[in-house]
Length: 98
Image (cartoon, rainbow, N blue to C red; front, top):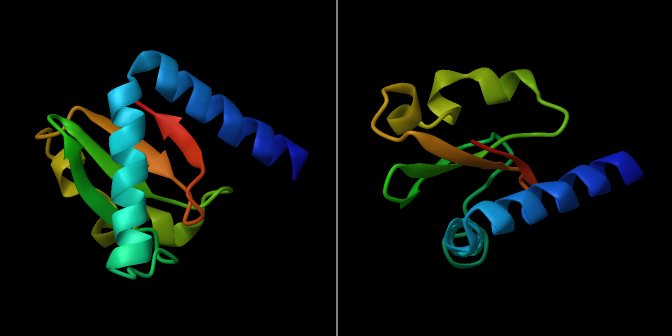
């Protein structure tokens, strides 16, 4: 549990240092999805573009098979229309920023 929390904190720090705007946009999209649209994130959906060439993808930590299904991954990233992605858990913790 401590390792997962540490990983989440490091993810947010790295994201904030790299591009604070992306951090804010990822968090805003996550809040829109969970609080406003009430989207069920348990299947690890793509939440779409958050900025030019950036998408937000939801996945589990540790990764589950459902995260590898094409319908749960961002097609814009897979096709090259987006060059970067933020991956967050269904609870809003940053997993990776690329």
